[in-house]
Image (cartoon, rainbow, N blue to C red; front, side):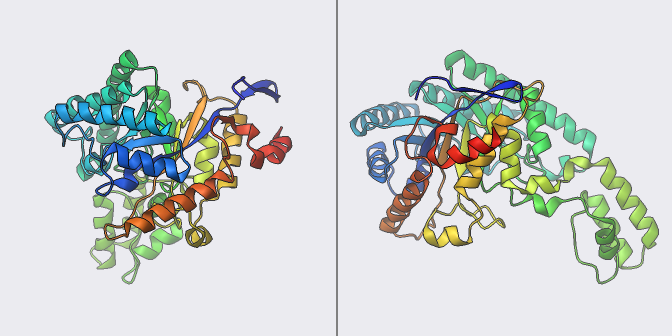
Length: 403
């Protein structure tokens, strides 16, 4: 099982990754707050590997060093007692709610880098775990001009590369940045994700619900643009604030329709960073294109309209769009593709991590039952941790077809 499996395909060797099923302990936030509690619940659910969320009482910005030291000791003790491991650390809602590393003020950027990310990486290294995060957003003013936007992207990438270099000094584990789904949260399209990986050498975390927003930012067709300019037109995404002002002027007769169309089209073409493509709306296209550069894949069931982070229960699976078989087949395809230039090595390990959110008023026993059902569902596809992707029983016939 641990021996590398190379398969000849089309003139190059495919080295498939080992696959692990894990769970993010965000499910325990504000309920089971001690490591001993959430470790026991996770072990009972049939999971052996954990992603530690900053939301669950270990965020460096909200705690003190002495507590963090005790927390790490308890994690080590609880993991050993339950025979489980923390594979990754991940950021939570606290830093996600900020402009953070993309804040216009350098003081805030430095604060997040020095007082949040670096300490968190040190915590992860104590447990020999990898790190993933997302803690930045561009203010609306940055989106209004492509030159300004690209300059801010470059500044962000430079900061992230400094963080990458810091992580490499204290750990041999990977760090990864989560892909998002709107223009102010870069990278949010397949193309920008590839650009980001090539430019920084940092991997991407793929989330099975982060393809729901891109459909709202598709470049409008000629018909859609003409319709929105009419007095009774429906609002659509035209990019900048300037272009939307033109729409309003055309609707009320302040601007000739043809002139408005021309000016908006010019503005759209000048600001391609604000628009997605149809393929960006597909989870499976994302997986096919960059899955092999995603050491962490966050698993959440959703309806394709919002990032709901549902559990994988029978009820939700009936209306959800996330199909494990299709996801794993898409992952196989990503390893079948020829390697893109300028990319880091393909992932040798991929952790599929259940990231399940629950309402504040949810009953604790209901949460635990949904954890169990979700794990049982995914164990049908990943029955044993550490198996090669192509050796998963559910993929054997598919692998024969594609090879």
